Amino acid sequence: MRKWGEDEAVTDHGTSEDVAQERIASELRRLGVADAICSELARRLEPLVRVLSPEVYGIVLAGVSLTHRLHREREATLARSVRGLTELPRLLGAFAEELRKLDEALGVLTVQRKRPEAAVATPSVPPRRLLH
Image (cartoon, rainbow, N blue to C red; front, side):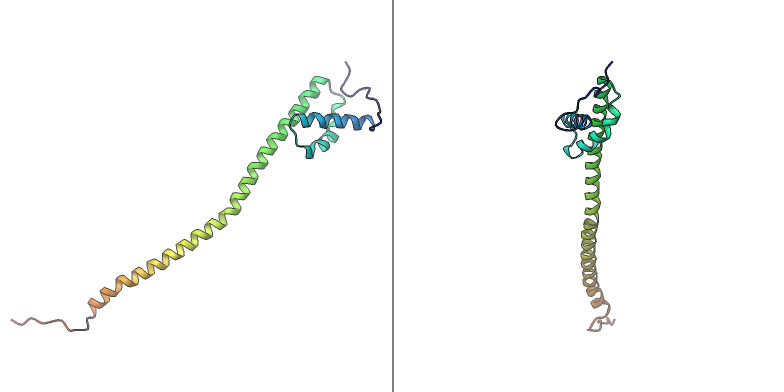
């Protein structure tokens, strides 16, 4: 059985390794792997896939593609979590400001409520005395 990449000829485009890497990168792109990392993955995979049969080669690339998608999903989840954590101090600061305003309002209401009590407790006119 011929292994994947065996008997690759050197072309005008580069060595057989370069051609194999471009072929791997192309397959990875087709499977949905981001262009930004296809070349690096292809460079790392090329020595490994040389000894694989075409069936196993396809399975390996599918596994790499799946792993990449899972990584991107986790990365997006982490980014959302980080945004949430950076938003939390702002929200807590706004909440603290609202509590401060509420505390001020309660202080004013307490002072206003105590004024009539103070006026009754210390009247300016002496109370009338009943004589019988």
